[in-house]
Image (cartoon, rainbow, N blue to C red; front, side, top):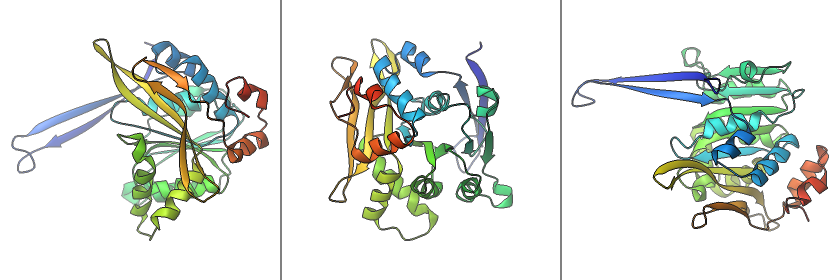
Length: 282
């Protein structure tokens, strides 16, 4: 089937005394070649939300995609990456090569994939640093789990646009989870300052969930939220789009994009009218 391009497996074997009996666990990762339009067809999001995300990608907002196990974070990351204009320079970083954007997106794209190489002491954190000197317009991190998050924050604050996924069960724990991972670099981080840095680094949070629809489970975008620091220096997360669990549909909250994000989008060639049509621009 064309939509199933890459099928990766991870094998875990156990034996006594770690487990009471020997076991073999095979976890299959099936990464779909999807577009935002395809995700609309699948009911993961609606057309209006897809158009908002498309505009935000094309005008260089930075994204953090979160959700629990099997909520489709990597698949959604690919759909967003597919919206990046073909001429823009992309660098990807993963523990294992799974996104494979160069092969999957095709064309004449400038894409280089990097990965952790534990055998030579190149951790995700260390592997991130050389990417910054390659002048990428985008750095895409397959799944952030540890100290590399501090590098993601630093890279975004220095002008690189970043996309990444992270495992988190609740949207309310996004910032605290980011700070916990930043602290894994062994440095001393003031929690309040780290939250402010993260809120400035990532413009948009996308939270994915599994919801029961009829008798089946369905992946949906639970919310699209703008992350920013307010005039009092406090990190804020303001939802732009929310899933209505009673009506089982999406609703725009009426929130307008903040001044800092609007300025950034304009500097990248955004047309305010495109956003006004969606009700997210003053």
